[in-house]
Image 1 (spheres, rainbow, N blue to C red):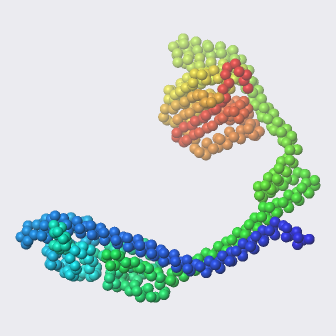
Image 2 (tube, helix red, strand yellow):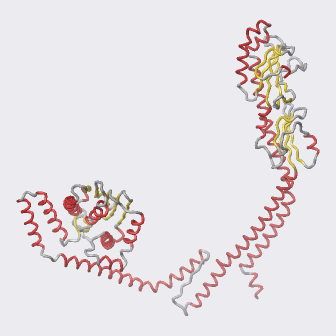
Image 3 (tube, rainbow, N blue to C red):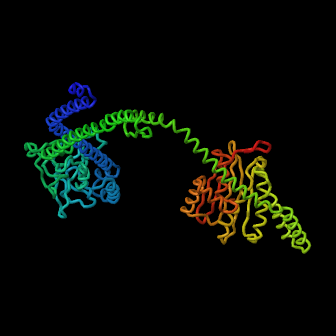
Length: 582
């Protein structure tokens, strides 16, 4: 029975799958070891052939470019006239010929000198570092216009050179076979080494270019100093090397790549290590997969079954699973079903919390009511008396300040909870007029609002505390002239009000502390603290009022930078005059 159960279990199927995969891995490893050597050898030979073809094409391009330069030189009118002229004519043309040779010299890097020979092989004129014996006529057939490359030779300063010559024929002759001279370039072969840069196939491989006498034109390899000659045929017969060769068509030079088979063995060993590492990684992945299945499928299912069985004994317990999303979702749905019976008590707790908050705000309102019970008519009459005395003594500015103070007092103790934006902005103007006397004109309050918003309803005394906060906490500590900007503009179904100053601002730490205080202001201990701070008309009070009046329909944001100023943004829904207010 247990054997049958294990055979049909998910873990048994996973184990069978792992065994089959291991068998395939072993077979693949065995086959790959058998063919890796052949693949590496073929790949190296193919890479060598591609590199040789690339170098051969570069040499052919060089040969073609050199032929074009020699052709342009040999058949230029000045040179042809020089070849066909007599001794006196050549003396007259000598300076012109030297100019042509100089212009030709700058067309190609590596030209050490230029020589012009007559039809018999005698040197007529030379330019640059050109020895008289740099080229010897070898009696080639007339009409052969192919470039002739000499053997390499080393000059006195150790530089390896070769001569490239091209016969020049009389183009006015009917047969075009009359040779009138020869143009020869003396080349420094050091430049050919640049063709072999970055061309090594393996770390110990060699790249070499030799002439027809096996002299080394260019070499790139591990022998240190460049060899004078190189035996490519000997390397080809040595089975320890893989040799690829290519010959140029006209230069009669040989290009070869020599790859030690030992380098291929190193790469073969590397492939073996990679195959073994791959097998170990797959085995490790299988092991991790098995662990994953056990931890995220089998064990969670067992835990879920045990939880269902024990729920009656421990009804408050909840299951916590970290498994596959489907199983975890099943556990979450089960917990959600169990949590529904606690929903009513949680809602009751939330309602009690709201009642507590309303009681705190009611306490604040009662405190404000007690403060407003002072005989207002007595204060009004006293302010009017002081205003009359100020006018009588010619102190008109004092009278205006007292008038603004009287209006502010009447506005602040009025009973309506909602006012128009127009009234709130007028209240700020009166406050600004009074406070400007204290600062002797050092600050300025700018108010800008869209005309259509002036009849929008909003809570009383919402903006003036923010302006006052900007003045006493932002501008009072600054020596420069300060400005507070109050603006109101429409947005979608609401309006945005900004109070911005260019005062002291706040540090990042102070700003974050204030934001946390506002965010936590709805907690009972925070509300109790606000209720004990006198009038409670401050930033926290305003934040709480917005939350209670508008809920999530209002927004309160504060931004500040040290020495730049502070900006407070209020976003309120539009409620026009005559609508039922909250």
